[in-house]
Amino acid sequence: IVVRPQYREQLEPKLQKLLENKKFVFIRNASAIPKKNLNAKERLEIKGEYVKHQKRLIVFFGFIYRHKGAELLFDIADPELDYIVIAGQFGGEDDYCQSIREQITEHPWAGKATIAGFLPAEDVAQLLAVADAVVLPFRSGGGEWNTSIHSAVLQGTFVLTTSHSSNGFDKKHNVYYAAIDNISEMKAALNAYAGRRREYDGDIDKDEWVQIASDHLSVYETRLTK
Image 1 (cartoon, rainbow, N blue to C red):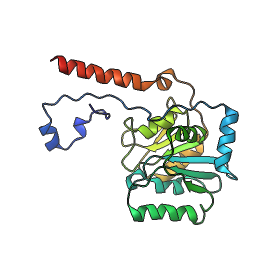
Image 2: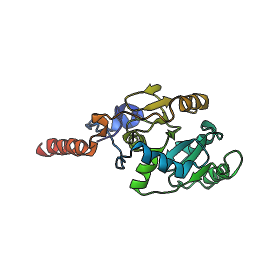
Image 3: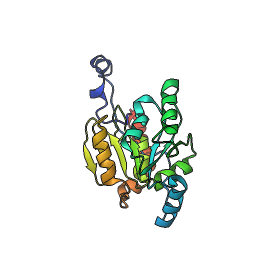
Image 4: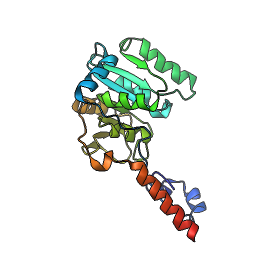
């Protein structure tokens, strides 16, 4: 069972050969945190606790590894407008972690960014719900397997990420897919769509884990009865 479509085709040829007799079943992923329902007044008040004297709240969410591209937020966001919150744990590369800490304390981002570290699911949901944009500039590209993207989409917040296969604005999900490491494209997309809220969508806002569990059960039932 895989969470990436066409997973077999993306493997190295030798691995494809080893697994040629295996049956692959794609079951899509979903948000790992709950949906946070806030009205406009609540959203504004909570956002104000973060942004202080800035205008826009920009959030990065998830584990902080080099391939996640968290350091690119300081090039994509605007220090004249934005307050950056990085909500996640560092992944162990000391020099990389230190470089991000230094950017937060140095001009032009001193006093305009913070590392929130690990947060409980409810707190993460609230942070994503009040953000003007969730920026995930993955260096390996994002997609429907990524729970961070699903989590932000569920809150209705604009998401800016990267992709190898998609490009441009996905209105239904309120996601802009940029080319990997294309800072100018991501800056333009942030300015164009930051603050945009996704309209309620029954397919997105339903409890997707019920369907995921059902899909797994179907696979197990099919294989075990054989």
